[in-house]
Each structure stands twice: as structure tokens, then as C-alpha cells.
Image 1 (cartoon, rainbow, N blue to C red):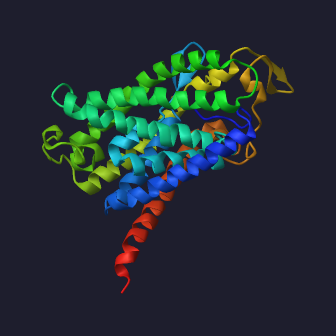
Image 2: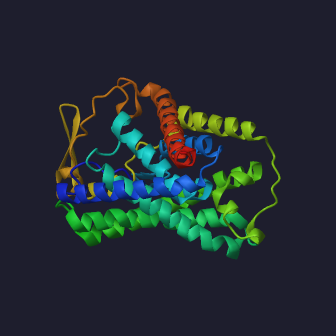
Length: 340
């Protein structure tokens, strides 16, 4: 659900860029009170896993695919504030290093996936946990929160399109197809989120933010199947496998948002390049400013046989940026106490 430049007009992009910066600033400020020694590696690994998982598009309809957004997953594992930072950093890495998602559209993408998606996932999961703790527990909570958060993020795009969308389709048509495709994507999102959260709970329930901040009767017993270092190494290995190997199995079909914006398009091949004509939103999309960078489109110098290498590099970049960011935030938290 990475919007390209040109899908909404410049004033709308600017408004949501300001909103994104303000939202992430607030998230960083609130995150200071929740960070401990385990937060930096855990946040970095969540970001790395989200980057890796977003590379694996899965089919939902003929000619349409979807991928993990990760808002609910991040909110459940590391909380709404650190989670928003995780998703935002993934989007920045994707836009800057891999030309995925427009640069001027970065504010809208962060608003939809990092702010709306994470907030919705947490606000849905938090009250559901006590209700469902005896009927499927966190697995059911994770599935429902991820499904509904995906729809909320999709509605974020609908709102942005209604405010300043390019010509080519009515808001009603965009809304209908976005909700249809993202309801199906949400099912896949829910399954991935439920499996991931359940695996973490079985290994290290103390690392799941939602459980640490829930009512005592909704918490599982704190039995640790693996050591902390063993868990962190295992989580990192999973991210590497997903980015380095499973990425080759990703569907090449456009995702739900791209399919929505392409409705009504006629596709022509001009000098080996794809050109869109007809009455559709995507014809207004602009080429990415960094489309010729070495890692653009998750390749290495255009060689898609090295997609796995690009994926591992991207996951490592997401981890490193989040790790450093959390360290900086924690340093800012400690600084006042060190003054005489």
C-alpha cells in the first residue's frame, strides 16, 4: 500500500507530511518512558521483520496481490509509540533505498500505515484481549486487530484521495475497491500477525508489549522457552530467511492500492516500458526520483536474481536505523537525570 507521487496533489501531500512529522515526534516523545535495555534490539528486529515480510506479496484476486502492512503486529509486540516508529522507518528505507513509495507521498504513506495502522491495531487489540483471553487468547486478538487495522489504513488513503486526489476515478469507486481488496489483504495480514505473535508469546511472553500492559488475568504464565539472546538471534534469522529466500516467491501482481489506481487503465508497451492510458488514477503517478538507484525495485543494479541480497540489505538497514533511533531516544530520557 505504498502510494506513488502524483496520486494526490502537492498541498494534500504537504498537509499529511506535516501530520506525519508531528505524529512521529509525539510517538518518539511518548516512547521515552517505555524503553528499557531490551527495547533497542527488539524494535530493530521488528522493523527488520516488517521490511522482510512486506517483500512477500501474496495473491488475493486474479491479477491482484497484497502484503503485510504490519501496524497491528508492531503495536502488539513493541507498543503503539515504538511501533509507529518501526513502521515509519521501514517506509523511509523502502522509499529512499528501494524507490518503493513516492518521496512526496512519504507523509501520506506514514500517516496511513505507521500512524493510522498502528493506532487502530493497538486500540482494537487492547480492549479485545481481556474479552478473548479465554477463547483463543492473543492469537484471536492479533488476527482481528490486524484485519481491522488494515481496513482503517485503507480508509486513510480514501480520505486523502477525497481531499486532493488526481482525476481518473470517483471517490465512491476508489472506496469500494480499496475496501474489497484490503478486506482480503487483511485476512492474510491477520494470519501472518497471529502466527508471528503466537510464536513470540510461546518463546518470550515478557517481550510482548500488549501482555505487559494488560490486566493480570489476561497474561500467560511467564515461561521462557528460549533465552533472550537465543530469541533475538532466532528472530533475526527469520527476518533474513524471509527477506533473502521467501522474497523470491512473491507475487508480481500489483497490490491492492496499485490495482485500485489502475482500474480503467489501458496498458501499452512503448520502447519496452509500460505506459498507462485511459481514465484511471494511476496515469497521474509520477516516476520515482530515485528509480535508477542501485537497489531500486529490490534488485541489485537491475538484476532481479539478487532480490534476496537486496532484501537482506534492506532488513539490515531498517534494523540499524531503529536500533540507533531507540538508543538516541533513551539517551534523551536519561540526560535530565545526569544534570547536577
